[in-house]
Length: 341
Image (cartoon, rainbow, N blue to C red; front, side, top):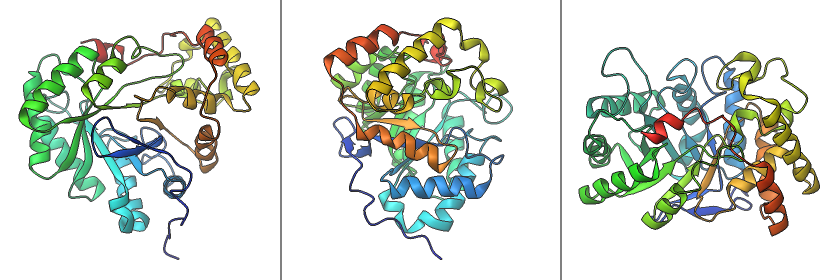
């Protein structure tokens, strides 16, 4: 039977305007960093993507090296697009990025014009699209002139291969610089994508103010701190978890101090009638300058649990004060160097 999207898919998902642009994103977007690579069963990934769209998740976030192996998340999504979602292409916002290592040699990472535009062509071929909705510079390149990197993003739009452009993990200062260059080129900067969570609040002192002043959107990634802000680690490191596999989460990050914070936050969530993950997601969206938050999902059940964050999205002042006691930075920001350069 051909896939037919749920008729009520737009009834419960809030959509937020992305900065001063005309584009709106769902409050919760789906990122394909993990769980959608060639090492995962296709039908599982397919079921998650179909369920996400049925729940109003119209934004799918990719990057050239998502997998594993590199490129396979784009290939998986491309197959789901062909099998199920092609009739709904114009209802979807599809983004991809380039900046981290993708292929060997001096032209396979960072921010040169050669790498970014070659990578975009490869991404479009893997997904099976003529254009993506948003193309990102995945990280700031300290050795390539920023004007060259932003000029490549501008070229992607002028070539018809992207509708909008974004940056990821850029500091407030670099965001202002990038926005100024793109404004002069005539391709406005749409959005910044930084890491942000209860245990990683680096964007609050300056970056949130910068995106608000510049009129650009902000979409937070890793809002569950690579799984730490779930009930998974409340009683130790379970077998099969990211920490046990030493992938994106080192067990060294689960210190006694960090675990004490997580358990205290879990108690606040329980009083709110939420799982810890649901509260963590709702909290990242409490500031109206946050356009959206990116979640991952390894199952339909996990996706549904995360989307349940939208059932109780508001916090009273007392709750925020209590959360602030425990929501202090832990040494988990593995993207800190990229953001500081």
